[in-house]
Image: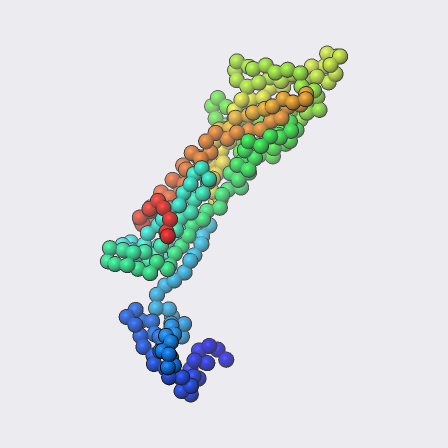
Length: 274
Protein backbone atom coordinates (compact mmCIF):
# COMPACT_ATOMS: atom_id res chain seq x y z
CA UNK A 1 0.00 0.00 0.00
CA UNK A 2 1.35 3.42 -0.93
CA UNK A 3 1.98 6.30 1.47
CA UNK A 4 -0.96 8.17 -0.04
CA UNK A 5 -3.27 5.17 0.49
CA UNK A 6 -2.11 4.86 4.09
CA UNK A 7 -2.82 8.52 4.74
CA UNK A 8 -6.25 8.26 3.13
CA UNK A 9 -7.05 5.22 5.25
CA UNK A 10 -6.18 7.11 8.40
CA UNK A 11 -8.43 9.96 7.37
CA UNK A 12 -11.33 7.64 6.53
CA UNK A 13 -10.96 5.62 9.71
CA UNK A 14 -10.55 8.63 11.95
CA UNK A 15 -7.50 7.05 13.54
CA UNK A 16 -6.11 10.49 14.37
CA UNK A 17 -7.50 13.92 14.93
CA UNK A 18 -6.58 15.55 11.62
CA UNK A 19 -7.21 19.05 10.38
CA UNK A 20 -6.09 19.89 6.84
CA UNK A 21 -5.26 23.50 6.05
CA UNK A 22 -3.48 25.42 3.30
CA UNK A 23 -0.97 28.22 3.79
CA UNK A 24 -0.66 31.23 1.50
CA UNK A 25 1.62 29.58 -1.07
CA UNK A 26 -0.82 26.73 -1.67
CA UNK A 27 1.01 24.01 0.28
CA UNK A 28 -1.49 21.89 2.25
CA UNK A 29 -0.55 20.72 5.72
CA UNK A 30 -2.22 18.79 8.49
CA UNK A 31 -2.41 19.28 12.23
CA UNK A 32 -2.41 15.80 13.74
CA UNK A 33 -3.05 14.52 17.22
CA UNK A 34 -3.28 16.14 20.59
CA UNK A 35 0.25 17.54 20.30
CA UNK A 36 -0.68 19.30 17.05
CA UNK A 37 2.17 18.05 14.85
CA UNK A 38 2.23 19.76 11.43
CA UNK A 39 2.76 17.54 8.37
CA UNK A 40 3.50 18.85 4.87
CA UNK A 41 1.08 17.25 2.39
CA UNK A 42 2.51 18.70 -0.84
CA UNK A 43 3.67 15.24 -1.97
CA UNK A 44 0.01 14.19 -2.20
CA UNK A 45 -0.81 16.90 -4.74
CA UNK A 46 -0.91 16.05 -8.48
CA UNK A 47 1.96 18.51 -9.09
CA UNK A 48 4.30 20.54 -6.81
CA UNK A 49 3.24 24.07 -5.90
CA UNK A 50 6.57 25.45 -7.23
CA UNK A 51 9.56 24.33 -9.27
CA UNK A 52 12.58 22.87 -7.49
CA UNK A 53 15.66 21.12 -8.78
CA UNK A 54 19.45 21.15 -8.99
CA UNK A 55 20.34 20.44 -12.61
CA UNK A 56 23.97 19.98 -13.69
CA UNK A 57 25.03 20.40 -17.33
CA UNK A 58 28.45 19.80 -18.87
CA UNK A 59 27.98 21.84 -22.05
CA UNK A 60 27.12 25.50 -22.47
CA UNK A 61 24.30 24.93 -24.95
CA UNK A 62 22.45 22.68 -22.50
CA UNK A 63 22.90 25.34 -19.81
CA UNK A 64 21.50 28.00 -22.14
CA UNK A 65 18.57 25.83 -23.23
CA UNK A 66 17.53 24.96 -19.68
CA UNK A 67 17.71 28.55 -18.47
CA UNK A 68 15.74 29.78 -21.48
CA UNK A 69 13.07 27.17 -20.71
CA UNK A 70 12.60 28.12 -17.05
CA UNK A 71 14.13 31.52 -16.27
CA UNK A 72 12.53 34.91 -15.83
CA UNK A 73 14.54 37.99 -16.76
CA UNK A 74 13.73 40.04 -13.64
CA UNK A 75 14.26 37.14 -11.24
CA UNK A 76 16.84 34.66 -12.55
CA UNK A 77 20.58 35.29 -12.10
CA UNK A 78 23.79 33.54 -13.17
CA UNK A 79 26.68 33.38 -10.69
CA UNK A 80 30.17 32.74 -12.09
CA UNK A 81 32.77 31.17 -9.79
CA UNK A 82 36.01 31.41 -11.81
CA UNK A 83 39.63 30.85 -10.79
CA UNK A 84 41.90 30.95 -13.84
CA UNK A 85 45.01 29.98 -11.89
CA UNK A 86 43.35 26.76 -10.72
CA UNK A 87 41.57 26.20 -14.07
CA UNK A 88 38.16 26.31 -12.34
CA UNK A 89 34.96 27.52 -13.96
CA UNK A 90 31.53 26.90 -12.44
CA UNK A 91 28.41 28.83 -13.40
CA UNK A 92 25.22 28.50 -11.38
CA UNK A 93 21.93 29.79 -12.72
CA UNK A 94 19.52 30.51 -9.85
CA UNK A 95 16.19 30.49 -11.62
CA UNK A 96 14.08 31.56 -8.64
CA UNK A 97 16.53 34.16 -7.32
CA UNK A 98 15.57 37.20 -5.27
CA UNK A 99 14.28 39.94 -7.56
CA UNK A 100 13.11 43.53 -7.45
CA UNK A 101 9.59 42.45 -6.59
CA UNK A 102 10.69 40.58 -3.46
CA UNK A 103 12.35 37.41 -2.14
CA UNK A 104 12.22 34.04 -3.83
CA UNK A 105 12.95 30.50 -2.63
CA UNK A 106 16.26 30.02 -4.54
CA UNK A 107 15.58 26.29 -4.76
CA UNK A 108 15.65 25.86 -8.55
CA UNK A 109 19.16 25.94 -9.98
CA UNK A 110 21.09 24.86 -13.04
CA UNK A 111 24.87 24.44 -12.79
CA UNK A 112 27.27 24.56 -15.73
CA UNK A 113 30.44 22.65 -14.84
CA UNK A 114 32.31 22.39 -18.16
CA UNK A 115 34.61 19.45 -18.76
CA UNK A 116 38.09 20.40 -19.83
CA UNK A 117 39.19 19.24 -23.26
CA UNK A 118 41.39 16.14 -23.45
CA UNK A 119 44.12 18.12 -25.19
CA UNK A 120 44.16 20.81 -22.50
CA UNK A 121 44.19 18.23 -19.71
CA UNK A 122 47.06 16.27 -21.28
CA UNK A 123 49.34 19.26 -21.74
CA UNK A 124 48.56 20.61 -18.28
CA UNK A 125 49.17 17.22 -16.63
CA UNK A 126 52.76 16.97 -17.95
CA UNK A 127 53.64 20.64 -17.53
CA UNK A 128 57.07 21.07 -15.85
CA UNK A 129 57.53 17.31 -15.38
CA UNK A 130 61.03 16.08 -16.35
CA UNK A 131 61.20 13.21 -18.86
CA UNK A 132 63.98 11.08 -20.17
CA UNK A 133 65.16 12.06 -23.62
CA UNK A 134 63.36 9.22 -25.40
CA UNK A 135 60.18 9.70 -23.31
CA UNK A 136 60.11 13.39 -24.20
CA UNK A 137 60.46 12.48 -27.87
CA UNK A 138 57.58 10.00 -27.61
CA UNK A 139 55.42 12.61 -25.89
CA UNK A 140 56.01 15.08 -28.71
CA UNK A 141 55.19 12.48 -31.36
CA UNK A 142 51.98 11.39 -29.59
CA UNK A 143 50.76 15.00 -29.36
CA UNK A 144 52.19 16.35 -32.60
CA UNK A 145 48.78 17.38 -33.96
CA UNK A 146 48.53 19.98 -31.18
CA UNK A 147 51.58 21.90 -32.44
CA UNK A 148 50.44 25.21 -33.94
CA UNK A 149 51.99 26.85 -36.99
CA UNK A 150 53.02 30.29 -35.76
CA UNK A 151 55.49 32.69 -37.38
CA UNK A 152 58.89 32.45 -35.75
CA UNK A 153 58.07 29.15 -34.07
CA UNK A 154 58.90 25.57 -35.14
CA UNK A 155 56.24 23.80 -37.18
CA UNK A 156 54.87 20.35 -36.48
CA UNK A 157 57.36 18.94 -39.01
CA UNK A 158 60.22 20.73 -37.21
CA UNK A 159 59.13 19.30 -33.87
CA UNK A 160 58.86 15.82 -35.38
CA UNK A 161 62.39 16.12 -36.73
CA UNK A 162 63.63 17.11 -33.28
CA UNK A 163 61.79 14.21 -31.66
CA UNK A 164 63.28 11.72 -34.12
CA UNK A 165 66.76 13.12 -33.42
CA UNK A 166 66.12 12.72 -29.70
CA UNK A 167 65.25 9.06 -30.25
CA UNK A 168 68.26 8.44 -32.48
CA UNK A 169 70.68 9.76 -29.84
CA UNK A 170 69.01 8.66 -26.63
CA UNK A 171 71.57 5.90 -25.88
CA UNK A 172 74.61 8.08 -26.61
CA UNK A 173 76.62 9.99 -24.06
CA UNK A 174 76.22 13.73 -23.75
CA UNK A 175 79.43 15.66 -24.43
CA UNK A 176 78.68 19.38 -24.78
CA UNK A 177 76.11 22.02 -25.69
CA UNK A 178 76.21 25.24 -27.66
CA UNK A 179 73.69 28.08 -27.46
CA UNK A 180 72.68 29.07 -30.98
CA UNK A 181 72.33 32.69 -32.03
CA UNK A 182 69.14 31.82 -33.88
CA UNK A 183 67.67 30.45 -30.65
CA UNK A 184 67.69 27.01 -29.11
CA UNK A 185 70.56 24.76 -28.14
CA UNK A 186 72.78 22.36 -30.08
CA UNK A 187 73.80 19.23 -28.18
CA UNK A 188 76.78 17.06 -29.00
CA UNK A 189 76.79 13.34 -28.28
CA UNK A 190 79.43 10.60 -28.63
CA UNK A 191 79.25 6.82 -28.87
CA UNK A 192 82.79 6.29 -27.56
CA UNK A 193 85.02 8.90 -25.98
CA UNK A 194 88.08 7.39 -27.69
CA UNK A 195 86.73 7.66 -31.21
CA UNK A 196 85.48 10.44 -33.42
CA UNK A 197 81.82 9.42 -33.21
CA UNK A 198 80.30 12.80 -32.52
CA UNK A 199 76.72 13.60 -33.55
CA UNK A 200 74.83 16.82 -33.05
CA UNK A 201 71.19 17.48 -32.23
CA UNK A 202 69.29 20.76 -32.09
CA UNK A 203 66.63 21.49 -29.49
CA UNK A 204 64.28 24.40 -30.02
CA UNK A 205 63.93 27.01 -27.32
CA UNK A 206 60.16 27.45 -27.61
CA UNK A 207 57.16 26.12 -29.47
CA UNK A 208 53.43 26.86 -29.59
CA UNK A 209 50.48 24.55 -29.18
CA UNK A 210 46.92 25.28 -30.22
CA UNK A 211 44.31 23.42 -28.16
CA UNK A 212 40.71 23.84 -27.00
CA UNK A 213 40.22 24.49 -23.30
CA UNK A 214 36.74 23.00 -22.86
CA UNK A 215 35.33 19.75 -24.19
CA UNK A 216 33.26 20.28 -27.32
CA UNK A 217 34.80 23.66 -28.10
CA UNK A 218 35.81 24.35 -31.70
CA UNK A 219 38.24 27.10 -30.68
CA UNK A 220 41.95 26.21 -30.47
CA UNK A 221 43.75 28.72 -28.25
CA UNK A 222 47.49 29.33 -28.85
CA UNK A 223 49.74 28.66 -25.87
CA UNK A 224 53.52 29.05 -25.85
CA UNK A 225 55.85 26.58 -24.15
CA UNK A 226 59.55 26.66 -23.29
CA UNK A 227 61.74 23.60 -23.73
CA UNK A 228 63.95 23.09 -20.68
CA UNK A 229 66.69 20.56 -20.03
CA UNK A 230 69.07 19.30 -17.37
CA UNK A 231 72.35 17.39 -17.84
CA UNK A 232 73.36 14.78 -15.27
CA UNK A 233 75.81 11.87 -15.53
CA UNK A 234 76.11 12.05 -19.29
CA UNK A 235 72.34 12.08 -19.91
CA UNK A 236 69.94 14.89 -20.75
CA UNK A 237 66.51 15.25 -19.17
CA UNK A 238 63.90 17.38 -20.95
CA UNK A 239 60.59 18.98 -20.07
CA UNK A 240 58.39 21.84 -21.20
CA UNK A 241 56.95 24.77 -19.31
CA UNK A 242 53.68 26.30 -20.47
CA UNK A 243 53.80 30.09 -20.41
CA UNK A 244 50.88 31.61 -18.46
CA UNK A 245 48.21 28.98 -19.14
CA UNK A 246 45.98 30.90 -16.73
CA UNK A 247 45.66 33.71 -19.27
CA UNK A 248 44.57 31.27 -21.97
CA UNK A 249 42.06 29.68 -19.58
CA UNK A 250 40.68 33.11 -18.70
CA UNK A 251 40.26 33.96 -22.38
CA UNK A 252 38.37 30.72 -23.00
CA UNK A 253 36.13 31.35 -19.97
CA UNK A 254 35.44 34.91 -21.11
CA UNK A 255 34.32 33.55 -24.50
CA UNK A 256 32.04 30.96 -22.84
CA UNK A 257 30.47 33.50 -20.47
CA UNK A 258 29.90 35.97 -23.30
CA UNK A 259 28.10 33.31 -25.34
CA UNK A 260 25.96 32.30 -22.34
CA UNK A 261 25.08 35.90 -21.53
CA UNK A 262 24.07 36.52 -25.12
CA UNK A 263 22.16 33.23 -25.32
CA UNK A 264 20.15 33.79 -22.12
CA UNK A 265 20.05 37.58 -21.78
CA UNK A 266 20.52 37.12 -18.01
CA UNK A 267 22.74 39.02 -15.62
CA UNK A 268 26.07 37.31 -14.80
CA UNK A 269 27.58 38.10 -11.40
CA UNK A 270 31.12 37.08 -10.42
CA UNK A 271 30.83 35.02 -7.25
CA UNK A 272 29.02 32.05 -5.75
CA UNK A 273 25.33 31.42 -5.17
CA UNK A 274 25.50 30.90 -1.42
